Length: 406
Ligand SMILES: C[S@@+](CC[C@H](N)C(=O)[O-])C[C@H]1O[C@@H](n2cnc3c(N)ncnc32)[C@H](O)[C@@H]1O
Image 1 (cartoon, rainbow, N blue to C red):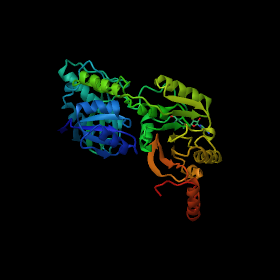
Image 2 (cartoon, rainbow, N blue to C red):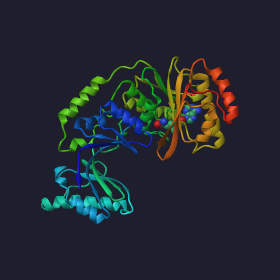
Image 3 (cartoon, rainbow, N blue to C red):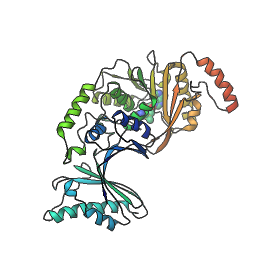
Image 4 (cartoon, helix red, strand yellow):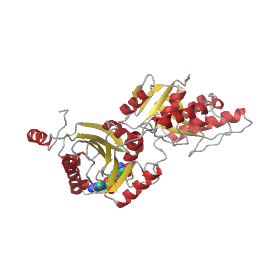
């Protein structure tokens, strides 16, 4: 059995591994390695706290503790009984186990995690007059992560507890809110310079503009969050954590450009306004009721990111029309802007009549999507149109614009 506390595993959504690795570089993490839906780097206690507070595209920060091979739940129980759990937490603390299991040896994943829970409790009982710690699945003091891939078992400590997308900002949701971690990932992929305007013209509950605003003022996304499991660990360094929070508070700066969210749905506008207020960002974010067709952006340059309906609740002709209208709005009103769209309706996107400068695969919930980035350059529309028409004829596709990359 290998015992190690030498690595951090920062989990994220598929498609965001690259931006997360860049964020970790910004925190000066060492030996950064991208794996599927996660980025691994060297362990360091200060870095662990900073990852939880500062990473915008991270869902959880895990510290792997033990790794061994096992091919049955009984075998797993035997290994786990030999682990000194009392070194990691006390009898009066609650615990829970999260699990991800892909193995022909552990076909009933719940059973494997139950065996681990039994081993932890039995080990405590053995050395504590038959007393054992309680399980609290919702809000544990200590959260373990059981990962089994075939016969390879890894048990980690989950330093975050609940997912880090729960920044404590959003109080109400609209019909299809985007996850905060994905919203932040899209903003980072758009390469918004934070020195120009930022817009979401289909803002729903306001998630994307709220993420943009915290980036604009350089506020760590989880600075206002209280619950982190690492605060219950035996090695918790409260002074170090509080000092880091003070530094982050001091790093907050002013922002003088506009951040605007708009939506054509009254209820969404109401929800977005109340979420912006709850996040303490009303002085930075303006929420308007407007259809994207009529949205006139502030003069100058900026970035627009939208998460339009994908068409699940609409007829095909309606979504085709909406996507055509969005493309037309980009062409008519957003010259000078970088316009970005996340969608899984690839057919619908053809109605934009625009060629993206870049496309990135991302996953939104269970949906495989693309994140499209369009550069709406000033003064180049006619030139690009005629070039594009020539290409469209040969490609049988419809493009009015194309990016400078092509
Ligand atoms: C998928 S939701 C956006 C969710 C949002 N990103 C969030 O995190 O809550 C799509 C939004 O587009 C809005 N919408 C649909 N058609 C619109 C239009 N023509 N103009 C402006 N907003 C529109 C809907 O009201 C809805 O709030």
